Image (tube, rainbow, N blue to C red; front, side):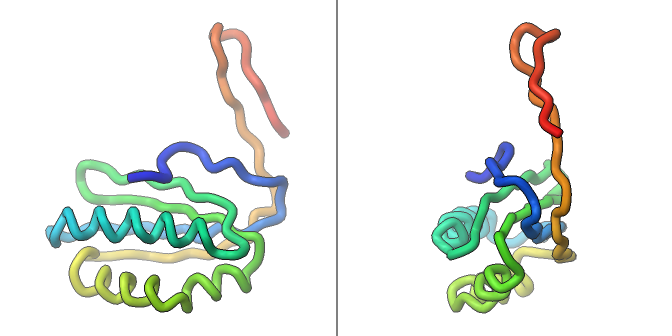
Length: 123
């Protein structure tokens, strides 16, 4: 799935939409196509900042999309094509999902670069 890896984000504040899901046995190829399309479409929306996504072999996945404002999140939620794909997901692709929306106030991390003793830290 495109969107794997770390999103390049601005300094907070911004918003995160956390989508946790358990896949069903539905059409894998159609799901993959829809997921790719939604990532590409989301990236075209005003206020979109980036995405991080992963899915395990057991079908459990987490996708976090990042947005400048809550209004941008609501506009994405109301997008016609996104609405149709969400409905299909509920019907065909997910056994369980949860959506959580949060305001990111602080962000920091570490990135190890070669050799192992050298690293970057951002606080």
